[in-house]
View 1 (cartoon, rainbow, N blue to C red):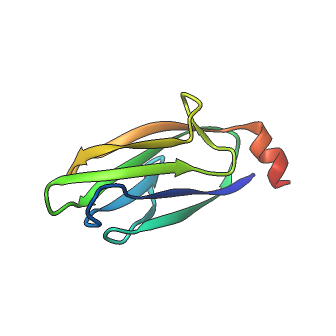
View 2: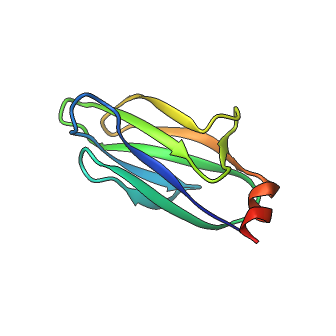
Length: 107
């Protein structure tokens, strides 16, 4: 089983956005306005999962975000970081991969 974290937060010039993270549809955490938070994930078997970022506070209606995968977890394309913008109330989805190597390091 794998234990690690996902770091996410506001990536814009003004610290005014907040986000909620889901893993396979279940809420795993949320950020405070303008903050960066490390959100723990645990007891995952190797395989693929759907990570969803929801923009839940954006006073200008545009959330500027970053998502950093830690501890050996990657996006489907092999990367570990995603940045961008999304409209208030919208969600972004990524496939993330927990490898068997993560299972070995956690043992």
